[in-house]
Amino acid sequence: MLNRLEKAATQLQAGNNDALKIIYEATCSGIFAFIFPIVKDYQIAENVMQNTYIQVYEKINLYKPGTNFQNWILTIAKNLALLELKRLKRDILVDNESIIETVGGYSFDKSLSTPTIELASKILKEDDFRIVLLYAVGEYKHREIAKIMNLPLGTVTWKYNNAIKKLKKALKSKGVTNYE
Image (cartoon, rainbow, N blue to C red):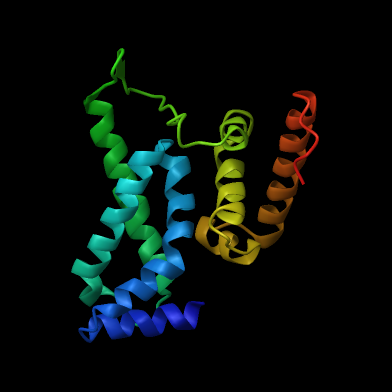
């Protein structure tokens, strides 16, 4: 996948706009899985993800070929997500029924989140939740997650396995047995 991304990045730099589609299709689920634990809101994560690809298109000339395009795009996504969090901390979100001040916590969009993702977000530490999402939703391998999160491969594997055990235990305590 990395060679294909590098090739697409080079093509985009050369003016082939179709390469952006290749980049998007290869990375969108992983980018979303990376952003979601940061912003903790489905629609905001989608907006940040889309803005990431706009930035990739606009700033592709700043990318240096051979320096890991995947990390470059994840850095853009992370920076945009953090900027969005800062903006949200200053704003007040208006809900149809109430006004929620977004100083610290963010709530999931209940209509778009699954019960399992909601449960995982509540019982897992942020890093563990991010690892599970990157693996399950983003379809990254543990080795890729280790690079993304700057953690040793063994730590990522250990955290993932413990998070899954914890999630299974929580699901079992809720009477859910059909989770495999």
